[in-house]
Length: 335
Image (cartoon, rainbow, N blue to C red; front, side, top):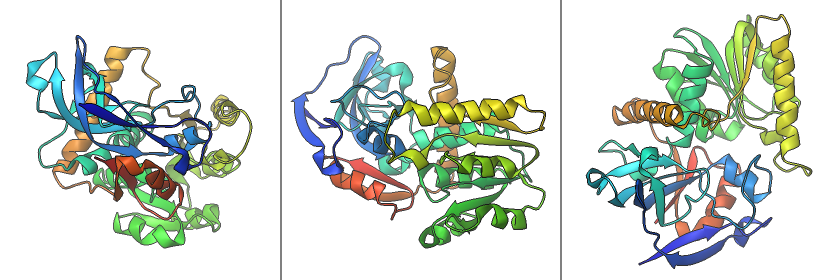
């Protein structure tokens, strides 16, 4: 058998991705060979294409932050034939992948592979920011920037399932989607602070901001006393030049400065890989949190937002669509 993989050769436009073939890899001890059924396109890959992701590998490499697939071969025979999900950071845009068995999380029966894929990195990110970092309680009000995106739509639904009120920013064309998920939509091109203040005069209990840049100050000022700002990206600098680490380091420094002030507000920079120094604990939390998200989806309390299903070999077209700003949810690559 041969495996198909999508290679990012360097700083190229989406149509510069390469389709390559190689022998299907063989798993070693403690590993599993997974036939990939779905891999997503997240903001990370959009940054990687520009050389802007904080710790991306050197070119050329195979992108792909997460996967859902079926185990073909494993050291543990009980895994064979199981549908699983895994967080990979890179390598997911491939038809076959060898992964550590300890990284695999079972996918419940009844969840379509593409639907399950939308909840892997997005679900882990949303769940951990909401419940592990901000620890928002029922009855609170939060602000979600980019509420029509992959993480945003998942975060809105998780918050509503927990009895939390949500204000979500989106473009005018996507506000109906945000409203349908149970949030109050605000046009991100308007005066967001003024609109949020009308809806929450005393401030919000948490803000989830993937934009970064100058707007992070407005996010901080919208917090109620005791509130939490969770920053998890710097989308505003996606198309700027220079060292990709600088915007993240500036953002991190600003958050640290705010935390040093006696202002009764907290800030955090969320990185899904932040706890990997303790690998055993990291894997346990990842599995626990993703399983919780999958259970909500399997129970009908979360609806997968699949923007499009596009063949793996057409990854360039899929990446261009994801970058266009015209879709809601997540673009998913399928066999």
